[in-house]
Image (cartoon, rainbow, N blue to C red):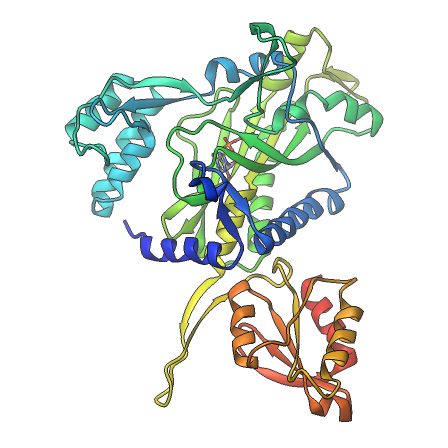
Length: 475
Ligand code: GAP
């Protein structure tokens, strides 16, 4: 199976070197599977969030957003099934004591095989997972002589289930009753507010509630940089529909979410759908949108037909009615739900991987190269960099005036140090789509040189046009 570990490692180094992503609390040697976003990373992340939020809420009259708390009443997680079901089959290596998620262990092994053979192993694993056949999974691991990366042995325990929720205590008294969980998905904050939003917003089914927020999972095998983290962010939308129409809405959201991804200009061949083999306890249909990362095709987003499971469960546990009166058919019912759930950090990683390009620009006379982040202009952390050619002759003042006139509209960057070529390269590395140089000619005829990141082409344009040129590409 074709993966490009070297490229992935180069991307991770680039993220650190250019202020996108740092290991958490690095001065203390970091914290496993926890990361911090740096000055450019947090801008990029915010731009992705805004793009999703706008497309969900502003562009859909029947979808509104909320911001629910991370802590929720502990019964929420009993009702949702997470206390009893939110677990993964794990296996421990008896020699190294290292614990693996069974599917990850087998997937990593399958990646080392020729494609057809790897696919056969994965198909067998999917079948066993679907049947919850833990003994069969262990047999598969033993049969294939899959070994632990630390001890190198195949001395395995039985396969067991481990819950992935983090728990903590509310208040100062430590007893069982005060135990609460850090939410493992944002969706439940939407379900418990379903009637609040429907009533106060006078929403009519079909309608949606969107939310962006942190989620926490005690992932046992957290690896591959920010792909699988213990603290991460989700962008979720629950769409409430009339029972019986869920199939139609599921297909519609599947298509709409794929179009959202493609609207960022990504090559469609880098995306694919993958139906779930083993459905979560709440779903009657589910599909992943997968992206071709350098580490292979992996899930970025899930679209789930969650039936009326969650609302019915909350109704039962809270003893409060969570029903909707549909005036068109004169009926009370618990709506069915289609969920779209995308990991913000995974979308960030996708955007970084898709943008990263190493280019050899050597000529017979000179060796040259650059790393360029070809972000869609609307997602780029910095939109415009402005450089005075020299630090004198009044050029910095003109450049500063340009920055001042543009910065209320988009993020600008001003720099006067080093040769222009080196300044361009630094902006390429953080993905700035437009660089403008103010030179002596600017003072004579009011024009500047604008340089385009992807083509490296340059042209002279009126200084007064710069703001509109940038705005036209980022709106
Ligand atoms: N509410 C449904 C739900 O949470 P999920 O498939 O478990 O479904 C949805 O998660 C998305 O959240 C995934 O497609 C992925 O992008 C992201 N995600 C899940 N676990 C993650 C983790 N440990 N680190 C980063 N992102 C994660």
